[in-house]
Length: 312
Image 1: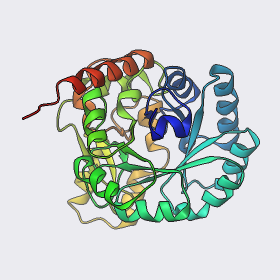
Image 2: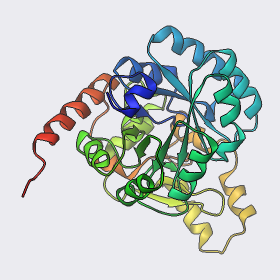
Image 3: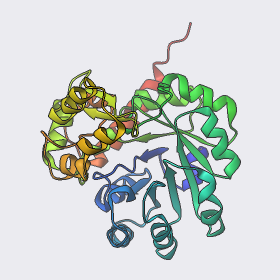
């Protein structure tokens, strides 16, 4: 047992990232059934769809699972009420002030974790009363921190500042990376990109295959004026870069982004005009696998790596 397995009552300190368009109940329940903590990604779900996924997840696993809620969500009150009504016991919040909802959730007996990209925000989350924080490095896919701190530096800096359990995220797809972050002070890891390329991920097959085919340097963070996001370098990404060359306004960028661009890419499989969010670690992902195989691989590699730590 460690702090994270104890906090969530799970076998392994592996948390699945609550990724939009990837993290439906099939992925969340598969991760929970494999000994980790599965998260339903509420960020791409209307309230009634979220309720349906929570209910299906409860039927698909008798293990703990949670919901990831980006606090920029327009129907946030409705989402939080559904989470309470459906008896969800674990909530990960991101993209907002942890003070806003932590007390409300804690009063309902819910374990709260907040995602941060700096030690400053980790401290604020601790002060807000969260049970743990996820510190996400710049390697991560999707929405990203403005500080550009990488996981290797971020984890020990956050560890210095907080007393509550710490989960490392960003660039973690292997047992060796899991061990490395835990040596640096993390109590567990959150894994996104590796689970996006699983059979149980709700992403489109085109997107999953693109993750597998990506090589080193295939992603870049852009759109910092709106919200920094790491994208695959497809035509849409190139259109963004071409617009930047003209010195665009924020409105120009918003117009290009339009609506439902991420859904179009990751869920509907439009590899040309879609927004394709994935982490740098995609260069290490070479095949689509079952969640059970991914977790088994990580744990066995973690145990093997522990035996090979160099001593002088």
